[in-house]
Image 1 (tube, one colour):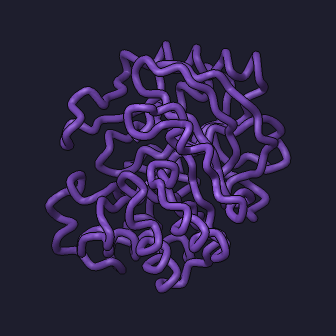
Image 2 (spheres, helix red, strand yellow):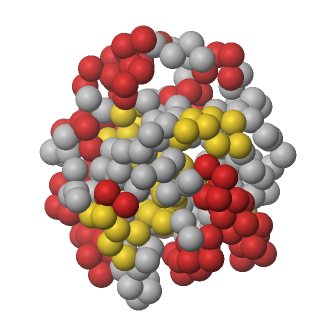
Length: 286
């Protein structure tokens, strides 16, 4: 594990992360290219998001937010930096590409190697001239099993960039599907399994898949806890015993839901004790 985390305010020693970590969050978001026209977090939401994070810091000692809004999702690293400063909570920004409906046209004719160089450029020099460097690659997406050809290229690009820079990869597996194929693609490109968190596995009611993922050393993300419209929390609690040590859990915060969940860190960031945090309504989960 790296001894320093790259946050929107600069490097942060891992030892400074002593409280809970929100492992999958969106503080700025625009998914209007997809089916959910309401999935936006604009500068108009910034004050509410800031107060929510500050309240979690005061009440529960929130230490770190992993912000997984990547390229094509409405990423706003400058906005994240303002939220982090005003809430006094460290925030890690991300890079990568979401799943295919959110890909720009130019991705269709770009090799994985060239895409990886784009990611490495952001990781080393910052996003869009801001100087703010990502500290994680994600949420790199696919929406089927197996991933589409463009999604396979962006996943391979993520793995190549991760191996070149030492960052880890967090994925978006649509409704939990395709996690095994994602892991196969990432590891085939040279990324070690323990540097991978396979996303949204609590939406897949298939313990056999979770048991197959767990021995690989990859993390299995139960990261939509409380989002009952997608999956019952009763089903989520049927967690395979063999996978318990490899599950970062996180709470989606869409609209008016108010469930709570334990929060731990994804691989390649920092490990923090699991703590139960109340859910707010300002952040969103994709």
